[in-house]
Amino acid sequence: MVIADLADILDMRAAGGTAVGLDLGTKTIGVSVSDLGWRLASPRPVIRRTKFQADAAALTAFFASVDARVVVMGLPLNMDGSEGPRSQSTRAFVRNYERADTRPFVFWDERLSTVAAERGLLEMDVSRRQRAERIDSAAASFILQGALDRLSRLAEPRE
Image (cartoon, rainbow, N blue to C red; front, side):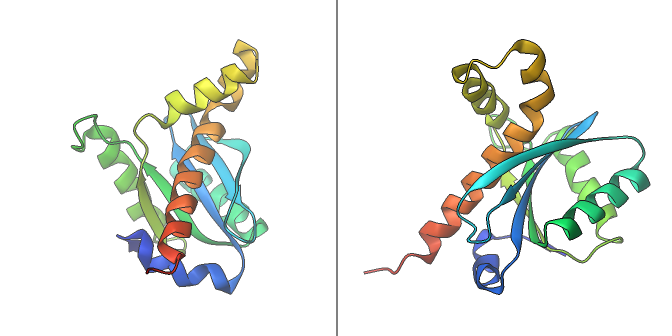
């Protein structure tokens, strides 16, 4: 089940479990997980992509291991906000995955997430080789953190 709006999952935070962020690449899937309070995203090791069935099985096992309640999927929009082939591929991946799992997915604009992740890793003085290994999960963490921050703002009482 794909949920169009992040506000629709606001009540899910109280139910416990975690939120997971994904950055879908052609060779790897970057993964991050929230804490139980849905305040902080932490990167996890990438999932190496092979075939769809193996990727789906790996994701399902991972989601179960971290008690994931919702998945925030980075949506690679063009800089003008339009959707290109990568966005269509991401949406197709989620549509196909829905047959394997009923966990809700929320799409989150991932423009410049890899750039931000790269800058963060450079600031931490991570070597080029290590950056290549960690960039996708760092981008997934950036995506998830943006969604978590937005959820926190939506939960604040309005005056």
